[in-house]
Length: 108
Image (cartoon, rainbow, N blue to C red; front, side, top):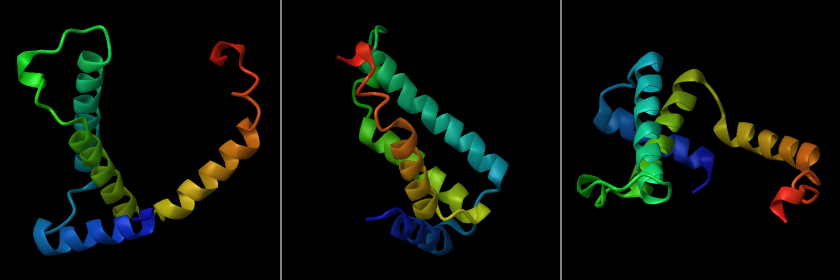
């Protein structure tokens, strides 16, 4: 599914099951919370912190999907065409950084 269709799917879900979008500030707070959950899993599973027993069953994919869902909500309610914005960003990064990482001695 591309981002445009993902935005449509989220909008359909909100209208059928969610009653309405939470306001932008609430969704921003939710996004922060969801990113924190991703950070917790990464820090404990892949970083130097030990993983608590209560965290071992946490699904990283599910938490990343929560982040994507809220980002799509924010894009919808603020009128951002995320597909277009992503395409522009990828083009910009390609032009700006096309050789940067290849020439980075730290990455060799």
